[in-house]
Image (cartoon, rainbow, N blue to C red):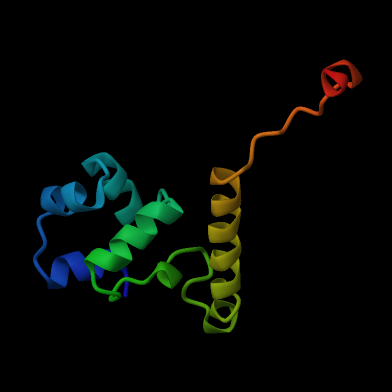
Length: 103
């Protein structure tokens, strides 16, 4: 289901929805008018708040194309993995020099 439909059918006040998702009203306006796609974090928040009615899989240019929807879980999984890898990047450990190893 599209977010715009969900908000209309459930008579959700846009300002309250923005507060719950953590975005500003201008961002929501852009998302509703297809001028902006939500970030992954925002899309996940929307899915949780709407209890899965508006799914993470509902976003994207090909969201209405059911044949391409099959690949979306893989794409989203890759995005999540990349995000986790970036956030858990280990700092480089300095190698010991010969002088410090002998002391």
